[in-house]
Length: 248
Length: 293
Image 1 (cartoon, chains in turn orange, blue):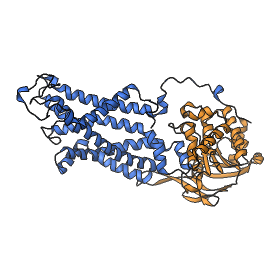
Image 2 (spheres, chains in turn green, purple):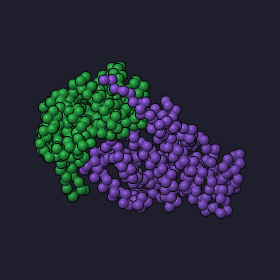
Image 3 (tube, chains in turn orange, blue):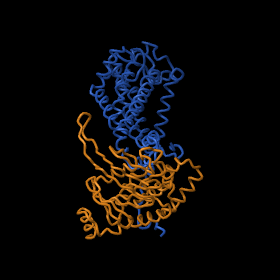
């Protein structure tokens, strides 16, 4: 159970003495049930990525709380192995000095498994994301976008997290690879039963993946709607997004 | 560090490493290696040509140039290296703190750096030597106190551009501690910048030390030091230009060795540069593995 309660976030701009702030998130609240795929749809600059960072505990909200089974995600121990993420930019998602194997091993090392178990798990993960075992010794610059994103997905699910935040995870891939990665994500969901928080500007991909969607604009939730009833969307902004997607 | 395992350092890098290590050893064992006393004056041998007894000849006071070069390694190279290590260390610690944690920490550290950097280096060093007194140690202390700010600035900039990388965000998500993130993810990627900045200041520091020696603030007269040897040779620049060659060549060799070493270390450590050959263009259609459905 992931609960987001009345989150407020603003970023300070200006120097040491001058204080100006820009509000990014305004009283955002929602709940993501276990195993649910929740879409967060919004255009660039709507604050959805900031929301993702807060859920991942990388940033702290100014007010409100994000609770993971009742405990704040700001504590490292609460997050460890339980919440994971796949980011948009596959070129900077893997340490350029790491091989694929080292990258996937990193979260496993914190679990305290033996090297043997880790290696076995890495093999299993590579197979699950559709990469051959030859990829273990490759470096990120030798991978294509789709391959790199698969490695990121393997790394993200390695510790069998309860929630996975996908921050524009497919947006920088080309369309054909997007479809493959979406299939892969669905397949992994059926294997691990984890909840997805699918942050995207692409309402079509969200409709394909998610059971429920939150439409996000200017740091606020405009509307929450079940994907099955997407055509009944009430808000003007939701309708604009939908008609834009249909027109394509 | 898998530099050795992959024997990834190129020929130039290996040669530079040998030169650097050789010079350091020669400096440490100067009393054993030097054929003569570097301070022994023999007026009969003034400006003597190189001979089997004095391989590089003798200077204006008939002292053995080779011995003076060997003894000169200590203040010129060894002391500079110690100063460099100290100031890079201080600069790296503060630079990492400022670049990684940002916010208030960053602001304060950078303002202190600004204050230190706002005085010209020479003026700061002169002032400190004025307070602490004349001598090589005091110049070196003054160097550490002024140079760290420059390194802190450069390292901070380098750290800043990497902290927002997604793999560091991912490491933070998985609950990895700040220390581990800096050690595992930031130090390797920023190492290249640190090595290059550090190696390029070796040369200027050797020359600055010699500059202070010239002003009579550093090494005192009879002691050997490369910069001072250059200065002494300068007085006879037109009558005996060859006197400038030994110290000048020594400085050039050491400085270039440090540069080449830094360069090839960078290549050897970075997997993106290591496979220097041409990578065939990838064919995504064939390389992409189909998803099992």
